[in-house]
Length: 256
Image (cartoon, rainbow, N blue to C red; front, side, top):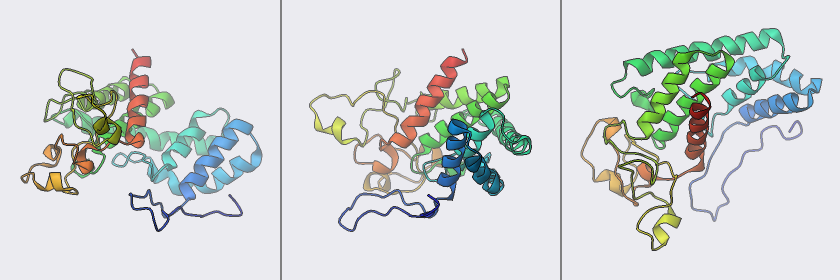
């Protein structure tokens, strides 16, 4: 990594599917250093982390949970949850993580649907954003136990499983009214009328980024969704939002 600190991935010219473009490796490098230090306790890895972590503290944000393109929070959480870290760094990370969680809790309590979403969060994969807010709250609870953190995380799970503007469970084959037509090629290719189980829909997306969504009327951001296989911009299946759903489910069950 030190020899090649910023080698970015780009799809080859003959690949036409969407890429996961990332303009910097700095957050991945920080996360690697944190994980390697936690695993090996070699001073070189901690030195790299301590030399760079301050610039990433804003990643512990009340309005921008971690995502595939922004993993700095995971680096900070790795370090703060490890034992015997640098006291100054640990306290800075702890304070930033808890301050963000407190603001998320306040916003969640004022939402009519009791989720943590802001208007700007209704983007491609908004359900992943909701799930990642849940992850952020559960990690804050691991740093310092606070019933409000766990409750707000649970509220986001309620949103994903049906307490939303559609009364729709956004997990296939789960609940009384689950969505049924994901943009998921294996589900669409077999003869079973039901989709594969356990898949989280991308969810409402205020941008009309596919033909199915362009047929929708002008609706509030939380209503911009259609349960159609054609709608990759609102009904896509992706591992990067199924993953936080699994974390959220595990964290909530562990807290019961």
